[in-house]
Structures are given as C-alpha cells and as structure tokens.
Image (cartoon, rainbow, N blue to C red; front, top):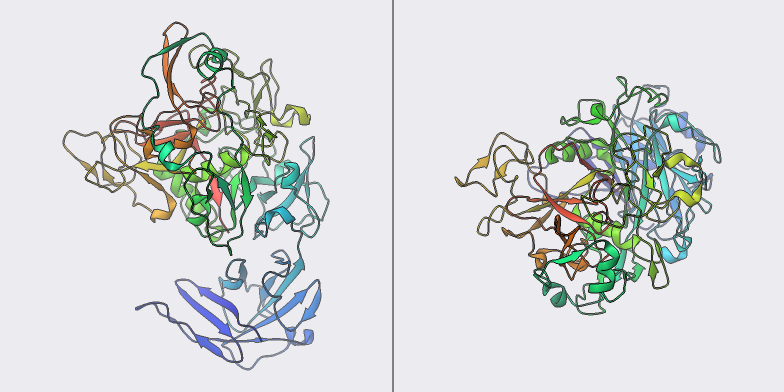
Amino acid sequence: MKLQKFKEEKKNQKVIILFTITCVLLITGVFLYKTFATFQVVENEDLINGDVSDPGDIYFVFYKDNQLTKEMPQKGTGYAYDYEKSHCEVPGKEESKAIPYFDSIDWSITVREMTERPTKCTIYFYQGYQEDILKGTDPVLERPLIPVHIDEKGKVTKADPGKEWYNYERKEWANAVILVDETKQYEIDQEIEEKDIESYFVWIPRYRYQLKESEATFNSYNSLMNEETYMLQNVEEFYQKILGGNKGKNETFEIEFENITETPSNDNTQYGWLTHPAFTAFNSNGFWVGKFETGYNQNSDTNLPIADTSSWTKVNAENTSNTNKEEPTKVIIKPNVYSWRNINVSNAFYTSYNYKRELESHMMKNTEWGAVAYLTQSKYGRCNGSTCEEVRINNNSNYITGYSAKSAPTVGYGAYNDLENTSLNQDGDNGYHYGSGNASKQESSTTGNYTGIYDMSGGSWDYVMGVMQATQNNKVPTTGPNSTQNSGFNGPYSNDSNNGSKTDGKPWPSSKYYDLYEYHASNQEYQRGTLGDATKEMGPFYKVSYNNGSTIRHIGSYNADLADFVNSVGAWFIRGAAYSRGTDTGVGSFGAGLGNESSEHSFRVILTP
C-alpha cells in the first residue's frame, strides 16, 4: 500500500499519523510534544456505528464517487476531496465536533477540534472537474467555500464541482462564496440568495510569465526617464506625444500555468520565464482573492442574513479596530456595500489573518496584487491578441464596491469630474452598480464579465503588505514615518529625526506575509521593485503635468497609471488609486501610504488553502 498521511490536531498538540501497516511517529523538532495514536481503515460500513475497544483509535472510512473503498485515491488521479460530505463523529454522541481538513498539496487529512476518542471519520472523494490548460492548478475547495456559477446577470447558483464551473480559456474565472450561516445547505444548481452570502472569492491559479525585457533593463528605470515636465491637457496627448501613438506600453503578459510539482522557473533575462513569486511564498497551486474590496458588516448581529442595508452608511464603514480571534468577524466581501476604510495596516492585517485561519487567510501582499494584475493583463483577462482593454475605474464617491464608470477617464487627478455619488444598489448618471443585470456593464472587472475581480481600479486605495526597510543600514521593516503616522506595527520609524521606534504596537507576522523593499528617501527609485509585483515592470516612468501645470505626477507606461514608489515619508504600498484620481487609477497604479488610518484606504483578503 502506498504511503498516505493523516494528521490529528487538538489545541496546541498535533499528532501526525503515517501508515503503511503500522503507525510511525514523526518527530519534527525539539520540545514539540507529540503522542502516539493509531487508526484503522474500516472496510465495512456497518462498523461505523459499532463499538471499538481501543479508545486511542481513529477510524477512517473512504468513499470514491460514493462507493466504499479500501484506501484514499492517489494524488494526481483527478480526484478531489469532498469537504461537504466528509465528516467525523463519535457514534451515539452528536455533540462531538471533530472536523477533517484536507491538504491537497501534502495529500493529507488533518482532524481538528477533536473532543474525545474513539472518533470515526468518513471521507469522500469525487472525480473533480479540471481544465487542461491549468495543468493541475485548478481551484482548491475547502470548507466553508462553496463553488458557484455567476451568470451574465449576476445570479449566483451553487456549482457542481464535478462538472465545468470555470473556464479560464474563455475568461471565466472560478468563483466561490462563504455563507453567513456556514451550516446552511444549498443543492446543486440552486440559486444562492444574496442575503445569505458573506463573502465572494476568485481563484488565481499558479503560473509563470515571460519577461519582455531583462531584469537589468527594468533596473535601468531607476528614476524618471525624462526630468522634463510634459505639459498635457489629457492622457491622449501623453500617448501621442511621448509614446508615439501607442496607448501606453499596454503589452500582453504571456502566461503559462505551472503546477507546484514542476521546478520553478527563474530565468530573469529578456524573454525568460519566471514563476510568479506570489505562489512560491506559500508553496501553493494558487490562491483565492477577495472579489471586492473588503467591506464592513454593519449588522449588530453578524450571524444574521445581510438582507437590509438601507440603514448602512459610508461613515459607519470607517472603523480602525481589528477583528480578533475572540470576536465575531465584521468582514464581508460583497458587491454594493461600503468598503472598510479608516483602518491602519496592522489592524487590517490581523483582521484578515484571523478571518479564516484554517484557510491561511491573510491581507493581500504587493506581489499578490501583481499576480492578479498580470493575469488581468493577459489573454485570460482583458487582452485579445495584442490588444488589451484597461479595467474601468470604480468612480463611486461613497466607496461602494463593484461600481463601474460609464466612461473611461481622460484626464488626471484634479480635473476628473465624472464621479458618481449614488447610494447602495443604484445606478447613476456616471456609473453602474454591480447588480445592474447587464453583462456589458462589467467593465470594472478583471475579466470584463461577472466572474472577474472588482475595485482593482478606483474605489478606495488598497493597502497591501508591501513595506520599506527602516533605513539603509537597518534592514528591518519600518512601522511608518513617525510616532503619529504609522501602521500600528512595532518597529523603527522611517522619517524621524530622533531615530525612534514604536514599541506599544502589534508584533510583526512571519516574513512570508509581507514584501520588504530597500530604503530610499525618494519615490522615484523604481529599481527597488520586485519582478512580479507590478511596479518596476510598469516602466519606463515619466513626469507629466495636466491642466497647464496644476497637477504634477509620476506615471508608468502601462495605461499612464500613477507610479510613486515607497519612500521615507510614505513607506507602505497602496494600490489601484481612489475613485477621484482619473487616469491615475488602474491595476498597475501604485502609491506610497503612511500606514495609518485613512478615510480613503481599504484592504483585501487572501485565502491560501
């Protein structure tokens, strides 16, 4: 019998059970307490409700396509774990709540919250749908994610994971939802009511992409290509006068999906292929990204359906406190809600981190933003052949998620007036809300249809976990510029004459949860970017001025998006730009934030099961 792995977790103890014929104890570190336990694969369904003699035993029953089997299906045979059917129980004791979790990378089962023994776990596998071009990077479903179809009018129905429910070749990205009441059951093809949905997520498969130029060339864009300030009336003049008529660089990213079993690609020369770093950080085959900017649940009881939002307000969605492990989560990721703003980076991080720990939830990193940006700027997103459409701005001044402007901005910040200030669930003169019911109105989606990701351009600025080092000599991450303007994390200040540090804040998480950038006082040293993070590869960079010099800004070559790098004053990356920024906005837009609370800064949640 081929080696297969099982894990048992209870509180801070873990029991890792490997089986061939006998059980083998794995010791992975000094001072890590582990205990022996045994388990048995039950081949007779009748034994599920029978007595067991050894109180230390865990009994497993395996099903493939609803047929009892002697063993788990082997990895790579097209089978997927059915988290909805799989369960653990103590016969005759309904209060037992042990929960099985499946790791598709290790091909292992972890039993959590086990209250007593013996426990019997019934595990189901089904022949899951797989798209050939994804090469095994298909979405990973784990409780409480439910696969869904979203049709051309925005209607959500539960998908059959054994049949086609996504198609990246047709720009139809995989979507899943989490319900307010995670115990509520929906049947396949049944419509899921919007009031029952807490959050939407979209799957980003692991991939490698081809560099158009070498890393050395990108490093040459270390400052503005021309210090002269170009005086422009609108962005079209930039395209014509400076880029010779080309609408920005606007090149298509060539992407190939790459399974985690393959050796990562690391050729950073011209036309070389590079495994996107967002996937290597978590050793994953992909990740789920919040479909919208994170919203704030204004219900007093977050266990209630989100049915009536008429009393919700923009101001009430501004809340700096984080949701910790002991409190009910306030996170909602939905269309037509107010985005959660006025929260500093550390609180946004720990809110995201504590949201769904079992799914490795965390706040979006700068490189993860880049992974979404490059997939968007490919044939799987907004490109057809050599032509790419820019993701339309969310121009709603009330920070309502999922909005789309009726027309693209033509001028930069300070002169863009086509804003929309409607309330929830309403169209306006200048914009469409997500539920307009017309597929042609989804220009603010990364796919141009309902299956994509929204609010990547405009809406709120999005804080991401991308931060600068404290100083040139102090390589640790800074908390922010000074004692009054910072992220809330402990650490040195980046712009403090006394070289002070914050000591009464929150601890830094593991380095895999943030991207760290070299220190510099200037916001123009673009060579500090990372390949894949949609900063340095957005060059060359220019200085322009709109409206006869009233607004000077730095822009990149992709769609003339804003390009300000982190620096001693603004040490935290912010992405996408805000609703009012006109042509500044875009998937390739990046700026420098303080890290503190701001009424125009929100954040995004990532799941990496």
